[in-house]
Image (cartoon, rainbow, N blue to C red):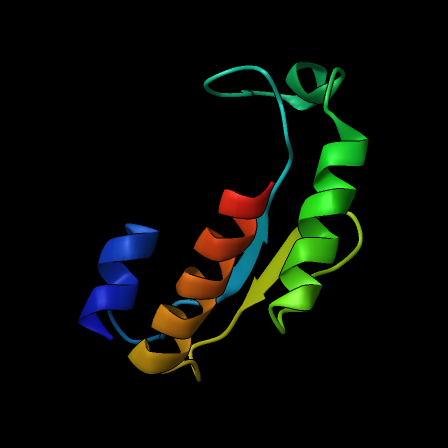
Amino acid sequence: MTKINEMLEIRAIDKPPRGVFFCECIDKEIAYSARGLKEADVEKRMKFCALLLDEGLLIAPRGRWYASGALTETDVDKTLDCANRAMGRL
């Protein structure tokens, strides 16, 4: 659980980390609002989703990743490895 907390920058006290991550392809370092996502590259995100599926990962079509406290460190490591390979192919 320590590695998961560090990666998510969450310090869980009495609840394991859980929630939704959002992935979008933009030509900015950070998007602080919905306005910052106006110029998102939808085709690139869709290609990334397809590459993730090739790796065995299914994420929501609009780039949402759902996390659960039930994930083990091994699950997280495998997911990150798959995502890294997909990103490398993008």
